Image 1: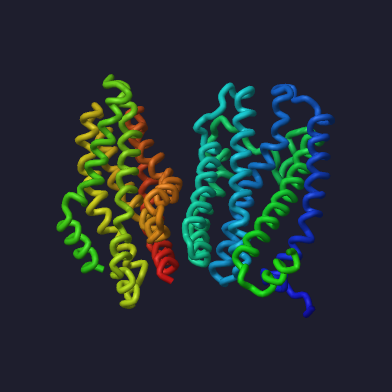
Image 2: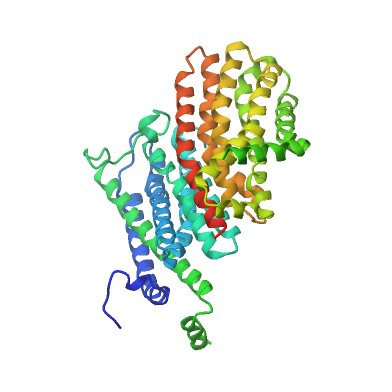
Length: 247
Length: 218
């Protein structure tokens, strides 16, 4: 094998086995951190003096909301790399990220609704952050629908990249919405510049869950990327050889 | 550019009924609201800005399949791109023609419908002004959606799914301006934001549309 450079794994034929080797480790990481995060969150973290037990959904809600935004930016980034430099693998990764991002967006909205019912007394309000998160879900769905509707894979990749880039405007709007419009949704609980406003065990649990979600996202995206690679490159020699050896 | 706009006007004038369909949709859809919700003037008045804006939004989205579709089908779009003129310029001309054919009639009819919803003078003026600023944004954004979905089987529904999330700010500020007037606040803030949106899409959308057309005809 030739020397390892930073483009070595941009070839689908090399990325596919690498991802295959990483996936079990990523799943293990997900399980360990999720168990640790949930244990700290449900068994150790103190009960909130205002919200009681119901606040504990924060350990899923906040990391899911973070992931929904990060994954959209990552999707737009890889899609535009694939478009600008004609890197096939980058476009495939963008395609693989979209369903996971949509899942996290839905999860953030759903857990938010479950949290809103006991604390705000309503499942849903048309508040700026909730609305912009809902729009994010629509943007994910639009991306998936557009990419799937175009039969020519390359045209689908490039059209999706353009759409993702147009939609990326929404991400800062969600992030800053609680600052710009002072509505029902509370401000951010954690900031890089100030001391955290919550007990340190709560913060620990939230960060553990965030790591677990990251590992999960990587595992699922890699698995989906492998599937996309095998489907797209089905006529390539190495895939044919793989299929023969598996038979 | 000018000749392209004139050509689109001429084509619309040859198929007059087709060109009027979105306007008819706007009127019919808007008149469904009083039938569905009940005719109390107080309720209609509070509902009018939102209902009229949603109907205008849907009407202009429905007309988008005709923006590039026919030109793509008969091959003239490919010729436009080959003839060396600037592609964003082409997109701008098409969006302008689309707005004059489909958007402007909506702006002109909206006050009439507003009167039917029992909307009073100053609110009516704000509604019309808001639509005047907002409908070009819809035509420009719609161009991006229409170019992205060119020649696809499920193009019509897909355009709606792609453009609606992007058009939500227009809806919020457009309807918000009218609500502000009826609450006794100045609508200037909302209208300025609408104007800013118009300038932003005017600068960005033609390029995005051009890129999408190139992707479609690659």
